[in-house]
Length: 470
Picture 1 (cartoon, one colour):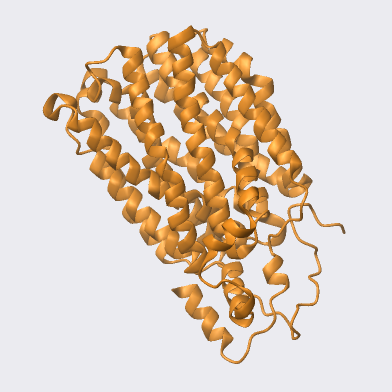
Picture 2: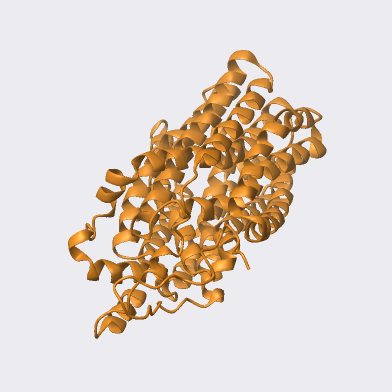
């Protein structure tokens, strides 16, 4: 039977170096789900409540002296400027993940993200400390961004490396499911709290940030109980046996020396899945609130429903990726933003719940099909010894550009009015990412190191155990 494009050959080749390969044990699927789905749920809950607050609350609380349009622009600028720290987080946590272990990187990113999120809930408003308020907000958002920079790439790398060969797209979609669950939790809590709009803007918006502390403790516990990914363990074993040929514990040097062009190509492929999500959720929320006078509660309900639908889209797309090929499904998904860009914004202008929900639903459909499988696809572009660094850095470069696309869309609206510039931007993001993914023609490297890992010398099992449990 011919293997699917998302998996390596069914029968591994004879390992180099002689002997019979002894692959490290895989973590139980339930633990992988717990660490990646529930872990990224908590991380993206933290991120989602900030994004919602940036669109609806922060212009009033932290930029009250500015006009409504400029206040939204300043709030988005806080989000975008802080996003510059994402590549820094990718470098830091990518290095940790590739040199020390995926598991440790995931634990540290959780601690940093949750701490910064709780602190944001404590920042006084502009009325209390003036311009120090948005300055502190920006500082804490930078800390959040550093943590986010290491989260997604680490979770995807861990998931696909822990997956059975024919289920890599499904396992690689776990972090994306976690993203949607985090969005669901955030919007559900905001919906409950935002019944009184005046009280919500005055104080209620802080409560979801405090809840993040409880979620953070749970996430840390989940990640403490997992073992290291088998492919990382095998890669470290191989490095020990070929020490003179590998730059040990210096993955970033090797990444920039051998794969820098691939990082940029991967960033371009990721751009639509990030930029289009920003536009379909955050920009649409702001446009509905400020141009169509839609109440915050209606926006949060729409976001809540869309997040549930997105989970279904991601699961179905991931299963399709394992059945029909990860690359094929990803290319189809990246083509969708070009198809729905203008219909999405026309639906939004109809106003009310139907307009907001319809626009968000179309936008997230266009983003989520590719988002389900692109992590698995791009993870296979990089060798295991630099996978987390390459995957994280590419994704976070796209995150920075995607954040500024959000600001750019708002600037175009302020300058020219209307939604057409945002629709054009949505279309172009899809086109660029589709071309970047289409142009990659090299081999899939997932599972490569496990196929070519020789049995180690005496004591290698103990070494593997220490890596898995470190």
